[in-house]
Image (cartoon, rainbow, N blue to C red; front, side, top):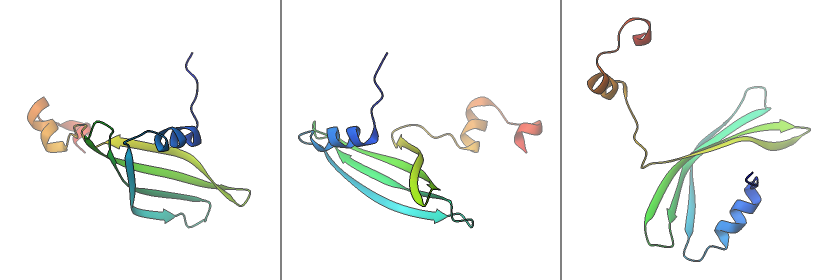
Length: 102
């Protein structure tokens, strides 16, 4: 069974990795009208120890519990992954029709 790594441990490991350079660029954030949920999103740019560059998108969802903001979800996605739009799905998999097209 693999060990669970906390965010703090992951950040400390990244900080101590020689040749790794990371920067965060927030793009936006909002708080719910009730004031107990919020999200932030943006991009992370990384220069890896081998000299390659990587950019990821991130979203973090927060919940206010007992007057303290706590992360409930954090997700990241590398920009090198393929995104399929509706038009690319239609071209590569045939035309979408019926209920799925609505």
